[in-house]
Image (tube, rainbow, N blue to C red):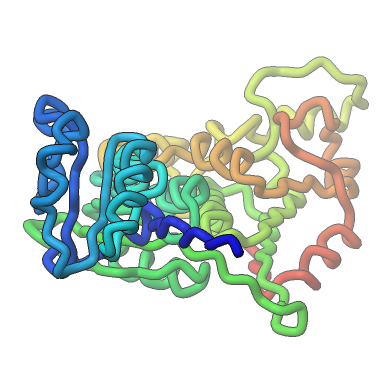
Amino acid sequence: MSIQEEPIKAISAEEFAGLDFSAVTIVDLREPDELLVHPLEGAINVPFSRLGKDLDNIPGDKPVYVVCDTGDFSEEVAEILQDRGYDAWNLTGGLTTYREYIESQAPALIDAKSIKCPGPIVKVADTLRTLKDGQRAQVEATEDAFVSDVAVWCDRTGNKLLSLETIDGVIRAVIEKRTVEQPESAVRPDGKTFVVFSGDLDKTIAAFIMANGAAAMGRSVTIFFTFWGLNILRRPEKVKTDKTLIERLFGAMMPRGSKKLGLSRMNMGGAGAKMIRGIMKQKNVSSLEELIQSAIDHGVRLVACQMSMDIMGIRQEELIDGVELGGVATFLGSGENSDMSLFI
């Protein structure tokens, strides 16, 4: 009759990190010079080279967790101790795996200080997208609105806001990445659709700030440009196209591109728009051009109304990259998958 050996008990790096070290005995088999580089607080050092002399000195009144750098030596020693009646465990992968786990749990640092809306939330969303569930990010921001924004963003995306405080004017938030899977029956439209009819600088900036914020929350966003809003999408340089005289005159009277847009109020022949842009730069607010590029980079759908283009004599080759053509059905289809549609 054969005697079946008891398997060696093992513990993962994650489980080891959750131990109360005061309630167990940690035996570190590394040599003293290795401890200088990566010490393990609370452990008894029993170098593997002196194991024969010190093995009997290991206390057995508490569970014993044996560790080494890779988990190979510790597995052998755990087996020996187990045979001697100890409640012995081996740290799988050793302290190398344990250190990697601890480093993965350190919060990712997000510096959003001096950045204006929607920059902080976009930065948070971009960073958390790279993390695994359970990992954390620590954000520092200085815009007062971030206190409300980050709380709402976490609530709507399913991520957990662990802490939120303001110290010496710096807002600090710690967020834990969580992916929430909803059953199909619970899914409801949460896309955002914007109709940009205006070609005013201030209204366009507002539209793209909201679009970037919605994209940062993981929502599908469509911006439908029609009539004067089409000028936002025009290339700044002149593009040679085949047009009628009326179409050429019409195009010459309209602003070519986002940098030529005026304000809806106090434009003062273009001086007001320049003042607003200067203030935005001074206050570290993203320019309209940066907001447009950020929207494209984050998957915001830019749709130019084909009918309006035909009326105003604008050709597709005159539009910036990343724009698609669509009609009323495109807009309505997007609206039916949205819980909010704004006409700007």
